[in-house]
Image (tube, rainbow, N blue to C red; front, side, top):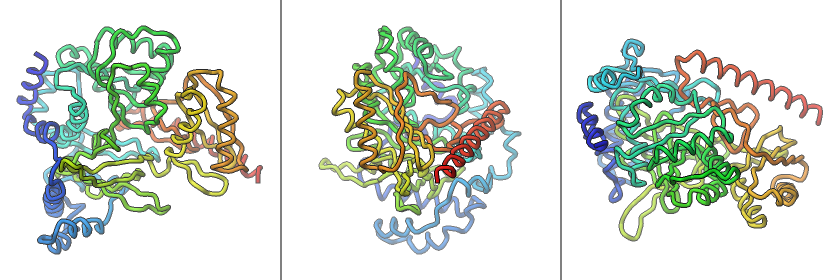
Length: 504
């Protein structure tokens, strides 16, 4: 019945063809010529329809019309990149001419919790739905999504779940922090979850009380798919074991995304949710999900995105993303400022893939030693793996706090506290050996990481990290929360600067 309801909804809204193109269809053979065709269409449309891009690609299109694919992509890599700041400054001029002059407020789609009214509005398509990135400077990129844009992005998430084995109508439970990603609007549909197989379970912080409530929901709702961020998912597993909670139902599928997924987290989650398939995804607020776990990395959806890398100012490979077939708000050679490796791979069976490996997150996601060397999340992942070899995999979670270039604080959550002394001693020894023997290292052990989940969670937390977890546009409460976070970060930075000056 639920599958039939989804089919009726998709048909009524007029998005069933888009669903098939994004979700069920895959590109696994001869993918480069198809990506090229999409890029040529995207550039041609943007060149003519969007005032921001007007004429930027005329010479490129003319010069590369009949060249071989390899030459085309080499030339494409020489085109300018466009940053979040470029898009934020451009505003609606990025949109095609039919939408660029429309007042977004007059076309705003609001979720009122009245499904039939919302469905009629979705069918008409004469609306914009605003969405915002978190913004590492607390100034988000606002995107006014049209019907095609909104469902194209939404279906990239469906594609991840479809790959795992979920089908429309099968139950999903979402464990997400409150006041983020426009989540509160979506929760207004919770009373109707029995009709669509979709339920939200929101939290302020991850503690025993929150996890007990979630376990009760898992046991009663019996979702096939559980969605969570890696760190909260790890804390769920930790609490279930620590408090001996009865997990009567194991979701068949668990999808994590949005954060760096450490090996120690995966091992711990798998040890508790032993009957669940756990897979990682990668994407962004403005583009949706772009890649999903496969052997040897995360496979980029070749019908959704084309991802390149180019060295940033420190030589790290920075991802440049073109969102294919999104012509109403084009993202062309969009500079995400995310660090990762991207490789083209051809399998023995003839299938082809672009695969992302060694995802470090934002280019600011590193610890700098006193000598100026940068240490990214992958360093700390291998660091924990090395420690865990000698302490029976007792380290479940690590959080690294920058305290200037003279101090580093490490917080651990341990499965077996008998190893605490060894973990502390070995941590200091290895960091002194691999980072610097002139820095001070402080180690502490906690039951839960104390984090404000309105902010983006990172294993590495640097002074001044203030990225809000999306969706605050037009909400005074959320904007005031951002101001609090900014003020708090500025205060911490001032105190640390004073300490460093005193040290020198």
